[in-house]
Length: 596
Image (cartoon, rainbow, N blue to C red; front, side):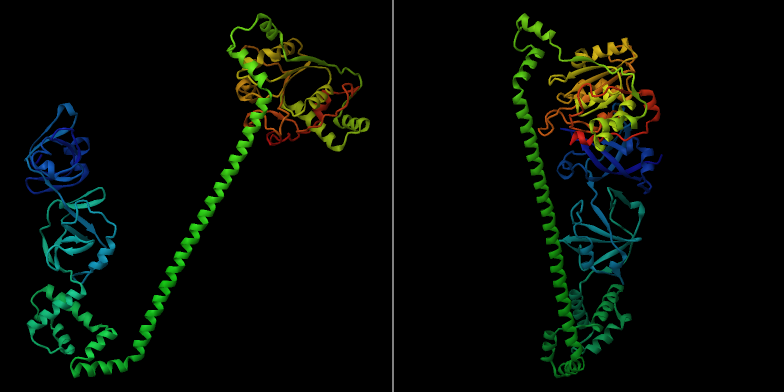
């Protein structure tokens, strides 16, 4: 490998309390003058993404001159790997390091024409740009040429010296790119010309001085123009460029009324020239003046229109935010009402809740044996057998419903209620209903059955609170009597959180489980589970019913009707098999009716 003379790198980090640093190599200069800036070529020489360690980075004067993230030039003495640092390589170098600070800014080619820069346009192009190493020495680039050096004074680009800059041939080997910005590794050397950077005012002052050098033309503009056209007599290409610019300006000269007035007061020759010019172009002058006024008026109107649109947009946005705040306030007021209703309901059942909590947590100490025995013996569930063994039965749903209408005066609405509900019961084994009396009437119409009625309690938080309180007993009965339909009716199921204590039942309805929870026995096919929510809907008491929980449950139409006849309202029954084979699919009730 060729010997390396200089490295160009970025200081990545400084080791605390030490003089050395970790650096990323972005350029290599060999002894023969070749410069490499390609990442792949650098990576082949310096593994670990081109990172190296230098041990004297912040030695001596370097400590005050250099900082992390600076670009530096490192004169190389020797290079060797560091075993403790894996593939990292250390570089022994000359004590003093030089910071690279030649930033190059690309600009559009139209800002440079006829060997002249329009620096006013360059300044507009660079508005808001921040320069990494300040503004002491900058270069501009267009295509294959570099221009400079420039400096930045009060936000305006100026030649570093004089009123012109040097044009250099672009050498890609000396250019590197870091974080999207271009930098020269050294000052450009291949000079190919000069570029003028004078403003129009500076150019006119320069022309005046030059005209004096070529002779006295007594202020005659025609003679001055003739002089400017004799470009072959000028000393340099730069002078010829400037005289060409001046000629263009003079040939297209525009004078204000004040300028013309001042010229009138000069020699009689100038007075006559401008008098004739003014009389000839009087209407054109007036029209141009009016046109400028109209343009200014249009600009003012456009500005006011833009400001008005911005203000309207701002007002609209503020109105939207105010509306959002009002909506949030309404939501907060509704939430306060909901919580107040919940607190009121809890306050009404305070004594019962306190007793349940004490029994569960035993926070009241050891209760008297009589109270414990009474609590153990207390069972809220009720087993009930519903008898309907009449030999007279209906074989079609229409006959059955016609009987209901004829005998007990059922309306068409109640007939549809019965028809839809019976169909859902024969299709699903896990049901959501709104009315205990109604579900009992439906069950009795289907023949003999056994029902377990249970009420959920507010302290139920796990399946173990539900299972021994009626559910276990009705499961055992269903297994013992497979020909008899069984129904477990749980009232106020959403007083505690059903998603907590009833999760195994949700899994059974969803087909996730098939066994009786906690056993290796299949869930009886003759056992139905019916949930009845808390009846106090207006108080919003109890947990909100979650629609996703009951997506696979049969939802009976919501009804608050309680008058379905006496317990012996039917002396006949529906023939299940015939009814099941003839029924049509039906839509379920709406779960939203239970939620809202």
